[in-house]
Length: 106
Length: 113
Image (cartoon, rainbow over all chains, first blue to last red; front, top):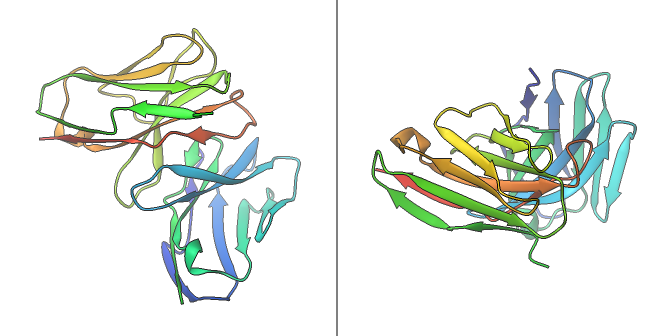
């Protein structure tokens, strides 16, 4: 059974710093990996989808990489802003990690 | 374009009561999903429907039933609610099972007393 882990569970950074969020998974035979953002009391917003054949995806200040052989994905958010404060979840197909709660302080 | 809609947004049930959570999508997606989210945990898959006419169990199906009413609608039924089913329930859809992007509804917050 696929297991998805996100460490750390929470982190706080000052505004302007780059954010680095980690996601690891146990079974490298995957179709895709998806990163989501969740604001308190809200649903999930899709940020990036990386197909199995891709090494990375970029959207604006967001960049996600995928290394299947090591079972890892990393989400980079450049020049963080207070509006980036949220919980970030990764999903390997239908299996979710518990998320990383991010606070960006002004 | 509404995307994925869920009703109701909030619900309080007493133990033993039944209810149905409704989900609809207007993106012509083939696959639909029901998840639950508990505090401090990621989402766990309850049931999914890869295509109209099919349903399959996910990680935590006990105490739930589903119906894929048509291509647009996928409902989740609690026959006899238990306090352990207190959770936030999310419906999602995707073009197909793999390797497509999932789109989520706003969620239903359910409390069972």
